[in-house]
Every structure is written in C-alpha cells, then in structure tokens.
Length: 99
Image (cartoon, rainbow, N blue to C red; front, side, top):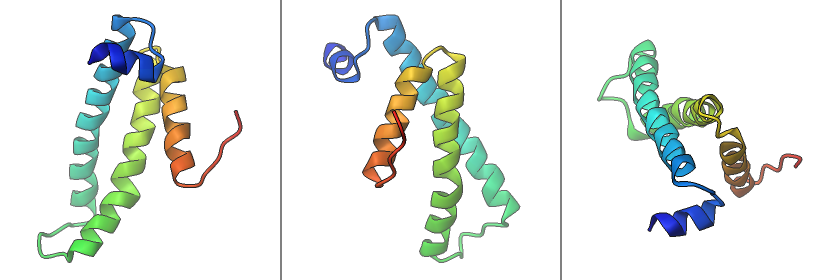
C-alpha cells in the first residue's frame, strides 16, 4: 500500500512519506481547532439550518485547512509536494495557476 502511494505521489523515501502523513494529521487537527474558534466567533447554534452551517464551514474551514497544509508542509520541508497537491486541487475547481 505504501509503495503504491509513494509511486502515485512521486515520493522518494519512507521518511518523506511519514512527513507528508504528519503534515496531513497536524493540518486536520488544526482545522478542528479553527472550526471551534470560528463557530464560537459567529455564535453558531445547533438550531442553524444545515445550509448555513455548510456555507460557514466551506468558506472558513476549507481554506484554513489548505493554508495549514502549505504552512506545515513548508515547516517539514515538503513544500514542493503540498504545492503540487494544492495546484491539482485548484485545477479540479477550474482554477489554474502558472507552473
């Protein structure tokens, strides 16, 4: 399984793969912290309609997670991997960046 991921992601070593997993996990945990903060700031209530909850989540948490991926990826020396990852994601939304 890890061999296949390394080939798909063009990762050279197991250590690089471990660092990538670490960045994904730290960013995911960070997104939970950001979610609590944002939902507290907007005075979220479980009585909110689902569509309002979803819009708030998509407009705040999703971009924050993407930024954290780049930030922590850079800290752990994996900027190139996460920049390619982000560009691929943005292309799916019809946004093309140079390079």
